[in-house]
Image (tube, rainbow, N blue to C red; front, side, top):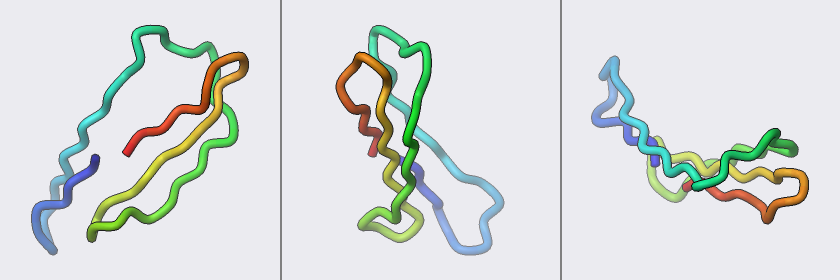
Amino acid sequence: MPICPAAGSNSIAIGITVDAIVPASITDLVVTPGTLVGDIDLAWTTPGVMDGLLN
């Protein structure tokens, strides 16, 4: 979940969780605003694998 510490700050912290098996490709990447200020939600599909979700 991306975190923007303060308005006017020049830094952004990002945490990412990666599946044990990395997909060969990602399709249909969608970015939507999250519930918190500075938060975004990413959703995607990978051929032959269940939908991915990173929040």
